[in-house]
Length: 78
Image 1 (spheres, rainbow, N blue to C red):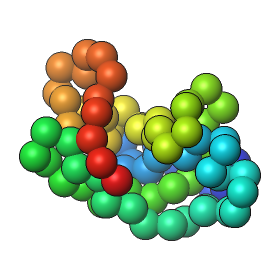
Image 2: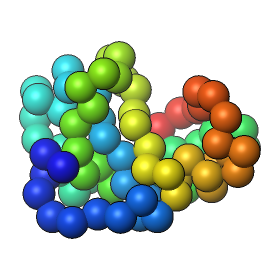
Image 3: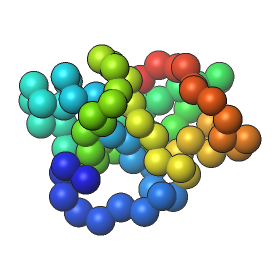
Image 4: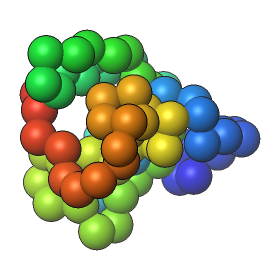
């Protein structure tokens, strides 16, 4: 990813939208995400080219934590 390093799909990491990522490097920043009453801690490790402002792209492992069916777009807070 844009932050360097090696990540695997099961890591709880995210890619931050380009508008925010490119303003100030957020590499390694810890964030807390809450979706449908479930909370997880994740690390910003990449930038998301296709994401809208204030949106995140989750790894498969993090997405599956919030929605085991892995179906559709998730809405939450971070």
